[in-house]
Length: 325
Image (cartoon, one colour):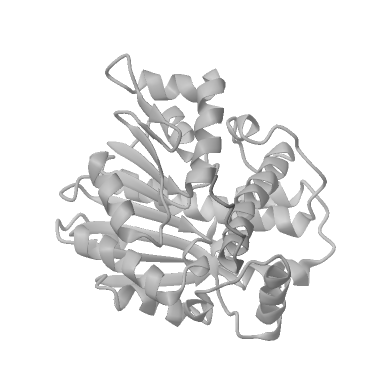
């Protein structure tokens, strides 16, 4: 029998990155339980509401979810849903199911994540009818292509792959009919930062080279070279989470430059404090009444150290430059 290979530092680091998927899902589950936003599907991936999260964490996730959704919905409306969405590092995200409920499904919705994460998600989908039924309803035949690390239907596809292995990602997306001629939206949330600059640059380049009409929306850390940013880095390092791509997170300019250097026509970025101020203020007032926030300065610091950056290519002249806050 072959000897078991010892764990390496990279195995530990990958496991720590996979754990961030659970962290985000647990935080979202708690925030939705408090009424920050509605997500009827997250309960099927995270059963327990879990321990209380601080109000500034809940507001931070609210800004993240609402900000990403704002641009996603704007892109879908601009393309009249005649497009594809590719969610890199999707984790236990529930966007596909919510878009179906809103009648805003793109032609096809793809997710790519570590095979281990994908296997868990597929198991949940297979065993929870509220998750499997919407996929079957949007599929034209009686059988889904499904195995341990992939699930493919007419409108939804989930692929197990390591984003650092671009050849494998490309082959699998092609196999499941990602169409370079159809406008594409790429989503990533705290994903590129865990790849080294060469790896993330190749992924961003690939998206730009493969599609002539596309948008990439990236939620990630920013302003990481000040004291607060350094404390964030140290806290993650204690959990064996190495921010291998942190150099793109020094500023809003460095975030934009990553895309411009990779062939995207235009890029913009806003820190989450700014995004929070641009969200519908009636709803912001509603969520601010949900919990008393003592540490307003801490919330401000947190929001100033995350951002949304978006980049476009618009050969078809769809007006993608108008997709903005």
